[in-house]
Length: 210
Image (cartoon, rainbow, N blue to C red):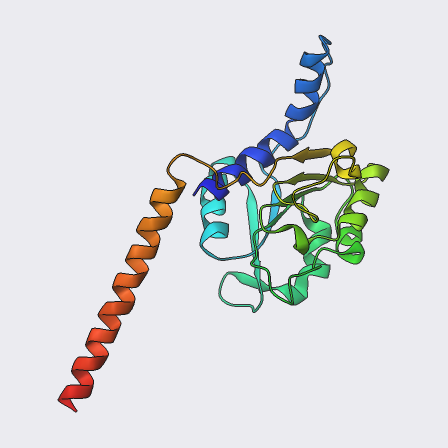
């Protein structure tokens, strides 16, 4: 839930220009300008697992139009092979996939080029999912915007160009860092182990019965 919460918070902050207004506040500058909105946005959720679905439920109150994408198509989920057709329509692209050979470097120059002008890329997955140089080129040109909780490399070294990249909201891999994270993780692992042990017990009983 905390990762989903960060994703929604970062998306809202980036869409409403909060980083810009925070810098203006620090400079004592009243800098009015119209920003983007999440309400009614077309969101492409690259990753249809538990976290992706939780993000979708949290965003539902903003009347977003969500399309889920996964490795293979199924009911209500599009295939990752359809990304070239889906990316040009999305206002916000959220990355919430595991690191696999297929997802490493998934967001390359071609992926980013397929995104519509002024779209927002939100990475709550892992830094290696995105080609950093390709993203930097799009941010520097001003064509795309991004919100990142993860980077490649990570931790991001001092002097790295991402620190000063325009159109970027950047946090240091803190999406899951909330006070009750460890307790929730322990509860989840305990529940899964209980299910596994229960399954073994059933299997053992059936074997004895046979």
